[in-house]
Length: 130
Image (cartoon, rainbow, N blue to C red; front, side, top):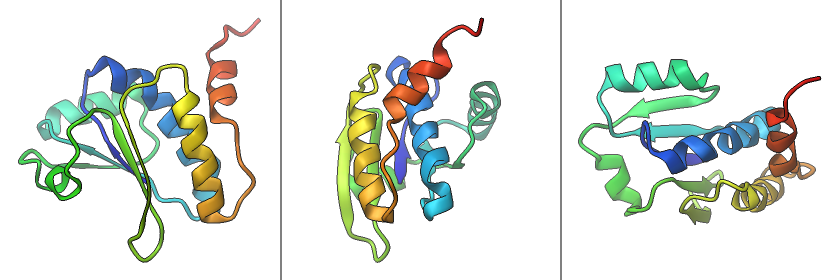
């Protein structure tokens, strides 16, 4: 899964927990997640540390990789199966997690694993612990 996002974008910040939940849920089934940032290395390094990013990431300050997929909306995630076929493109911000839930279901089919309700998982983790 390729995740196009930017540091400090409120939509990206809200959805990051869902992207990370998808990564955690399916990495054992073969999912590789890669976040691509356009900001300078130092800014990305700070963001990654602050957000405790748990997936691979790359910095592309010239935006060349973004041009390949012709994405203009942030965040955008692209599910690519082995062999390079694009399975889905989910563009735009959905802080409710409904979009992430649908992406998670597509990931499950792609990696042949049981679907994980990442929307529910993230919302449960966000609740204060008693």
